[in-house]
Image (cartoon, rainbow over all chains, first blue to last red; front, side):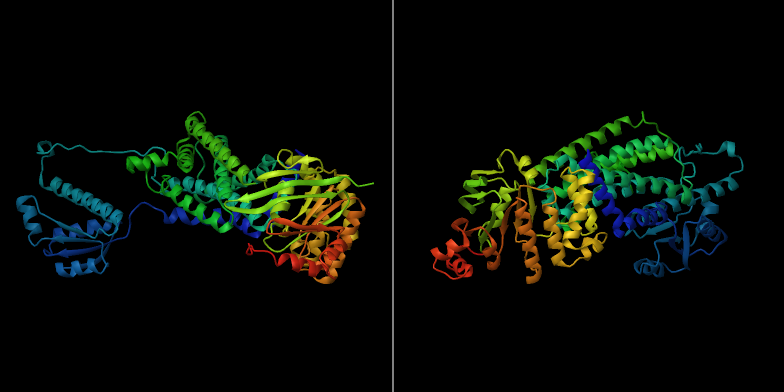
Length: 372
Length: 248
C-alpha cells in the first residue's frame, strides 16, 4: 500500500509538471467542445442553386422565390440558358440546377401540371441527396398551394390527403449540438484514457527508467495500478470539465443523473486504460504508441456512431461496432443526457464495458509479464 | 579466513535465437569485493549482468545471488541488490530530493530513514543547494554520482554498475571511484563493468569476457603476470584481439 502511495505521488508530480499534459487537460476539451459541435452539423445549408427560367412568368418567379425563401438555398445565377447552368455545375459554382420549361405557367393553368427538371451535382453525396429532397418537398408544397387555389371545393378533392405531423422527442428542437456534444465528450475521455496512458508507460521504456523499476521489489500490479489510477482520475476530471463547458456553452443539462454518467464513465475508463496499457506493451517507442493509438481512434470514432448512425451501416460493420467500446459510451451518454436513462436502463451496456475492462486489462497484464 | 561467496554462477548461459550471448560462464564473487567485469562491446557483459539482476531469465546453468536462486527467487534478489544501468535512469522531471524519496520509498524504507539518509547523501555529494532542482538541470557527472548514490540508498548487499562512468571527465571519474570505495568499506559488494583500464586496476579482481566466455579471471597483478604485460591495457588487448564476434 505504501509502495503504491510513493508511485502515485511520483506520477501526479510528473503529470502536473508536464505543460503538454496540462494543455491537453484544459485546452483540448475547450477547443473540441466549443468548435466541433458548430462545424459537425448534419443539416445541409447554403446549397448553391442555378435557375434556368425559360418561362419568365408570374408562376415561375413565385416558384423561385419560394425556393430561396426556404433558407437552404442560395440563388447563385438566374439565367435562361441551360448550357450556362451546366457549365456552372461543371465549374463547381452551383450544386443544383432547376430548369423551368417555357410553357410552365400555361401548362400549369391549363393542364394542372407542369414538369420541372432538376440536375444535381452528386460529387458530395450527402449534399446532393438532401438538397434534392428539400427541393422536392418545396415543389410539393408549391404544388399543393396552387391546387388549393384552383380546386375550389376541397371536399371533392380527387386525391385523399394524409398530413404527417411529427413531434421530436428528447431533442425537441432537433438541435444537432445536443446530439454531438455527448459524443465529443466520449472522444475526449477515450483519448485521455488510451493515448496518455500508453504514451506515459512507453516513455518510461524509452528513457530506461522502467528497467530501474524492474530491478526494484515493486510488484507488477503496484506498477500498473500506479499508472492506471492517475489517468483514471484525469479522465474523470476531463469529463467534469467537458460537462461544465457543455452546460455553459450550450446549456446542456443531463436529463438523467450525474451519478449514472459517472458510474458508467468510471467503468469505461477502466476499459480504455486497459487498452492503453495493452498498446504500451506492444510498443517500445512513443512514436509507435502514437501511431497505433491514432489508428485505433480513427476506427473507434468512425465506427462508433459519432457521425453516422450505426443502424445504417452494413451488417458486417455493425458487428465490428459491437467490439468497439466507444460505441457503448456514445450510446449511453446520448441516452442519459438527452433521454434521461437511468442506471437500470444502461445496465446491459455497463456489463459489456466491464467485460471489456476485464479482458483488456488481463491481456495487458499477461503481455506485460512476458516482456519483463 | 576466506570470505563467503555472495555471487556464484555455474555454466550460466543465455541464448537468443541462434546466438549465444553468454556461453557457460562460471565464477564466484566474494562478499565485500570490488569485482571488475570487463569485455569488449558485444562480449555479453550486459546480458550476463541482466541475468544476475533477475531482469533476464537464463537459458541454462545455475546462479545464486546473496543466497537466492536466479530462476525462482528473483523477488528476493531484487531486495538485496542495487542496479545502475548504462542508460541514465533517474527521473529528469523530478527534483533530486524527489528522486531519492521515490527510490527510498519503493524499497520500503521509513520516512525517518529517508529523511536522515537524504541529508547525509546530499552533504556527501555536496549538492545541498541543488536538492530542489530538477535532475534534468544537473551536469552529467553529478547525475552519475547521484544515480550511484540512489542505487545504494537502500543499503543493498550487492550493487551492479553497468559502465557507470561512460562519458564522464577524469576528475569526476576519480570522485565516482571514491564513492565506490566508500560503499565497499561499508561492506557492499561492487560488481562493475567498465571500458577504462585504469578503473580495472582499482578492482580487487577482474574477469575478462571474450565472445560470451570468461577468458581470464584474477587480480589485476596476477593477470599482468600471467600475460606478461605491464598494464591492464595490454592484457585486455591480448585477449580481446582473439574475439571473432562482430560488434553487437
